[in-house]
Image (cartoon, rainbow, N blue to C red; front, top):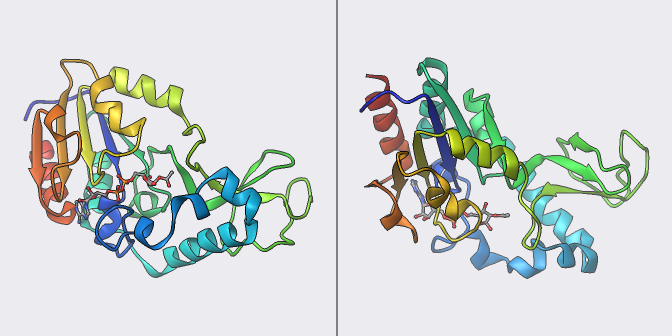
Length: 232
Ligand code: OAD
C-alpha cells in the first residue's frame, strides 16, 4: 500500500464489540432491548429524565468493566508509528480509543464520561452516576446536568472539523459501523475521488458498495492486519 499524508478512520460500535460492549443493531443489540424513543431523544429526557439518566449511568459504569481490544491498540500504534497524520472520528461514546493510547480522537456522538450543564453549558468530566440532585461543579446549579450524548434529532458534534478532515484525507477507513446513521454513513461519499476507501466490518454495511475495498471479519483480527500492512 502507498504512503498517505492524512488517514481518517471512522469507527462504530463494532470496534468495541470484542471488548464486550454491545452494538446497537446486531441481533440482541441495545436497540432491541431499549426503544430509541424511550432513552435516546431530547423528548425522552423531558418526559422521564430519571430513566434516561439511569440508562447512561449504567453504560458509564459498564466502561469500568471493559478494556480496549487489539483493534483499538492497533489504531493507537498506527498513530504513534505512521509518518502521516492519523485521526479517528468515532461514533462511539466509550473511551476505549483513548485508553488504548490514541490521542487524535473526535467523538462526534459525545462521550459517556462527560456531562453537560443545561444552565451554564459547560461540558464536565464525570466518573460516577448522575443523580437527580447532582450539581454542576462550575455554576453549582442542581439538577441541570444531562449526558454529553448526541441524541436522535440533535446535531452531531465537530461537524466542521470533520468536514475539513475528510477534505484533507487521502485514505479513509470505516470500521465496525452498520452505515445506518447519518451523517457518518455519508462520509465515504464526502471524501474526494482520489481518496482510497476501505471498509472493515463483520458483514457488508449498508454502504459497502461505495468503498474501494471491503474486508469482512472481526475488527480484532482485520484491524491489526491492516495496520501491519500500512506500517510495512
Ligand atoms: P451498529 O450497531 O449499527 O453497527 C455495528 C456494526 O458493527 C454492524 O454492522 C456489525 O456487523 C459490526 N460488527 C459487530 N461486531 C463486529 C466485530 N467484532 N468486528 C467488526 N465489525 C463488527 O453501530 P454503529 O454503526 O456504531 O448513535 O451505530 C451508529 C450510531 O447509532 C451509534 O453511534 C449510536 C446508534 O444509535 C447514538 O447513540 C447517537
